[in-house]
Image (cartoon, rainbow, N blue to C red; front, side):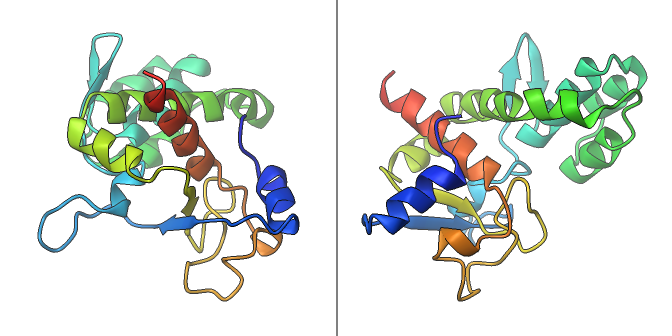
Length: 183
């Protein structure tokens, strides 16, 4: 991983100017335009990997989980649901799941999904690239793995020392942005 909380905290302590870009949710703006919520794993933007079309990055993540743990039955179900919430629920039912093995692979899986999502959808790619060097932060009050475990309106959200979560999705998106910038 190129980005971690420790790296961001170090920059914070050095008093480097940090530009946080908080997001949470997965719906388009009220006028239908693309906004920060396009960073969500649940944002509907179909993409292909290995000849399979995935409606969302969440679908790819959960399908990859089923593949990793060799659960073909759940994989088939994930590939046949359209709603990311249902894909997530199915992903929680993957048999033979071991947290240690998942932890070794989950970040790279999410980077791969988002690389496909943003590289194959030009409007999303443009939106992500326009974030320049912002630190992308999933301000989910409930998610302490992929988000920071608090909302952006929490007074602690601008201090990475006080984040309750790892912000893995934000860092995955930043890696995708870096990769797209050099293409």
